[in-house]
Image (cartoon, rainbow, N blue to C red; front, top):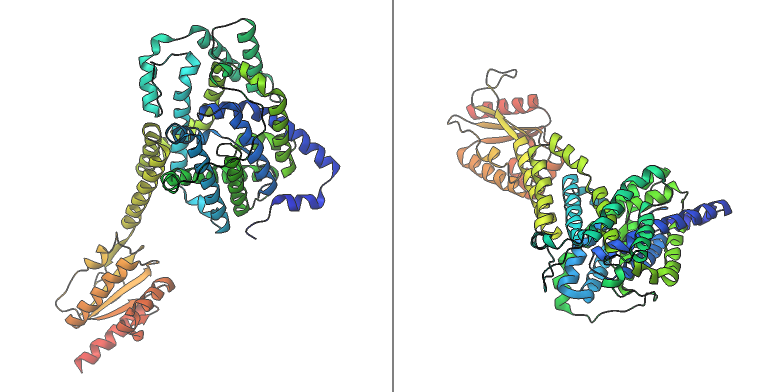
Length: 541
């Protein structure tokens, strides 16, 4: 079934004990998600409350309709760069449209059963752009971490522009901001060795807010830069502009692709943790619905969050009720505690995002690929990484996929080979007969193997041995049509030996099976050689 939410199966055997476990897990995950949602919203160039709107609305909807029992969804670092770019160029209305479009695309992907196609995105590309996103997040937070003052009117959007502005403003370091940032980062690094139950991000938010406000430090807080609101998210749609929709479609496809990859990867990880199996198409539909509602209620793009999902499992969450609870708890926090978010220092937010960037960079995996992979894979990895940092995610993914396809085709073409059998080999080959063996796929990048077939003036029968030919494309069929026509002019009979079912069907559809003749398709090379001898004998008569 394309769409069957896991909640339906869960409720059949639900119990009071499972409910308590889910409620506790949902509460703990909400505490973890609170500072992350605020920090990721700020990194995305929007108000801090929009991160909570996303975790509340999308988190609840995706848990309700999702194809995983334990996946926790909300804002993630993967979207920060692309969202910030959309906001900078198209404003919040453009972001709403892009988020809703991405949601619609995700729903269509699920309905069309494309959940399994995500696996065709190469590992080198996902690793490359993930590391690139980590670098862009890190660069984007240096200003707040160091308390820099950019030149008046400077509003850099691209990563390289931010780097240039940072270098130009390096003499404006606010040492109090830098001190708060360094101490916050140190606590975040050390805290996991002290306690794994209470998230370090919550600790630095509390300690940093108290220190900056009680000591009256000259450090920017969220309240200095953003207008804080505890209002509930309200549905609102921007004016529909067909031109803007078409302009935002590439970004929407990128958001949808990222959401699909990250959410399904999160599902795979959690499946292994609880010995379960998610429904990928249902999860894509749920992710789409979550993003549609997130856009309508003023949120940003959402997807499954691997770290929050793992925390959910480790704290006893075993059903979608935990994800729904996490969203409800965040809603209560929004209403009751959101005004106090104005106290949170910006260097603390920057330190939290530094850790997010470090954790998502997976630099060890990046280096491992560089040490062990082929030159082509390394090229795709590095190109995707560099393009993500220097340009944007859309360019990086498109170029990465093109590079991957080109390199794959080259490998396939290189794996294809052809050779003429030696007359003095294992099999006795009569005079006037040539055995030409084709190995590997025969497609447009390898048809020269067929076109470069050696010619012999005394040739009467050409045997094409195809025992290792599994695939032929239209270019190969076209080359073969030319070969058949030339053979007819030269009075040469073509015989196929060992041809497989798929190439045979292609030949039949192209009319070449009839042109060559059913009697000239043999199951074995001995049968083909016997057929060749019979043809030679007939010509002698």
